[in-house]
Length: 131
Image 1 (cartoon, rainbow, N blue to C red):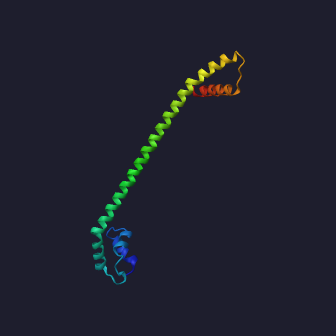
Image 2: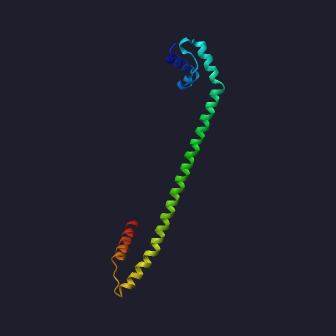
């Protein structure tokens, strides 16, 4: 019997190829018959297979936990960004009108600043687009 035949035999009983290979690792497959294969499968299916399945379940649990942690961090980060954007918008809404009124007052005394004028023009454009 060939190794592929032994794996195909195990697949008839809904075994995976990987589990079949593990079950037959210490077996001389060339001289094995179906009864020997069944005995090897039964020996493997006990404690060893149960332990492997337990480890797989634990690993899946860890993956799920990490995915949930990542999702939570992403949601917290998005909320933080939104909060900071609101703060920035409120600060702009508070400070720019004050700067504008002070600059208009200072204009009467001859103060001209291109940076402040550009800031006020950009703010007005932003206000028109928002409205």
